[in-house]
Amino acid sequence: MTFFPNAKINIGLRIVARRDDGFHNIETIFYPVLLRDALEFVSADDGSDSDSLTATGLVTGCRMSENLVVKAVNLLRRSFNIPALQIHLHKAIPPGAGLGGGSSDAAFTIRYLNRYYRLGLCENKLKELALELGSDCPFFIDNVPAFATGRGEILSSLQPLLKGYHIILINPGIEINTGEAYSRITPIEPVNSMVDLYLRPAEEWRDNIFNDFEPSVFGIYPEIGRIKEHLYDNGALYASMSGSGSSVFGIF
Picture 1 (cartoon, rainbow, N blue to C red):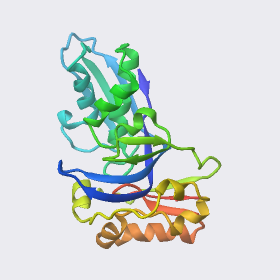
Picture 2: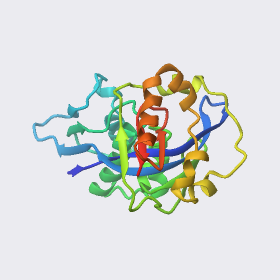
Picture 3: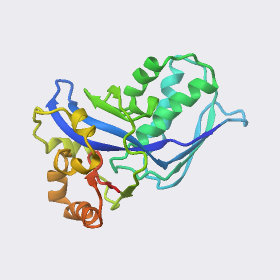
Picture 4: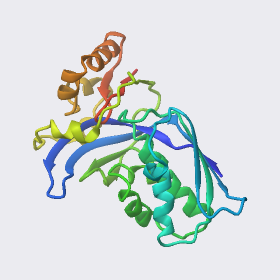
C-alpha cells in the first residue's frame, strides 16, 4: 500500500488567544499543495511482531518512537488489531518548514489504514484521532481548502480559489521550533473576517491578509523576509511565510 501525503500552506495566520491547556486559538486558511511525501506500508512477512521504519529524502534524526507515522499506527492499535508493518517514508516535504509534512503523514496513515483494514471509522472519528497527533492533522483528513479556528481543528470548507494560479514554494533550510515561535507572539483579537478577505481577488490579499509569525521570525532570520520581498519583486500577487516558517510561498 503506497500513498502520497501532501503539504499545505497557510493563507494568513492570526494568533487570537492563549488557552488554559497551553495551546493557542488561531484563525487561518489551510490550502493543500502538490508537494508530497511518499509512504509505503507492507505487512511484515518475517514473523516479526514489531514495526520497522526506513526513511529516505529529507530525513531528520528523530527516534522511531517519535515519528508521527509510527504514532498514528500505534494510536489505531489501541482499538484495532493491526499486524506488524514494514514502513518506508520518503520525505520531500521539509521538516520544521510550516508545511505540515509530519501532520500530513500521520493523517494519511490513519485514513489509509482505516480504508485498507476496513476499520469502519467515520470522518469525525478520524479527525478526533488525528487531533491527538497534532493541531493541524485533522485538516488532512478532508484535505480541501478550509478556514480553521480553535487550535486549527475546527474546519469550514472553502472554495479552491487558486485554480489557474501557480504557487512557488521556497524553503531556506531553516528549521523553526513552533513552540518557541508561539512564545514570541502577543495574541490579538481580529477585527475583520479572514474568510471575507480570502474571498476577495488574490491581488488584494497583499494589503489585507497577514501571518502573525512574520515580524518575530523575520527579526531573527532576516533572510526569510528577503525571500518574501524577492517574490514580490518578481511579480507575485501574494507572498507569505507558511505557518510558523520557515517556508515562504508566492502566488503568481
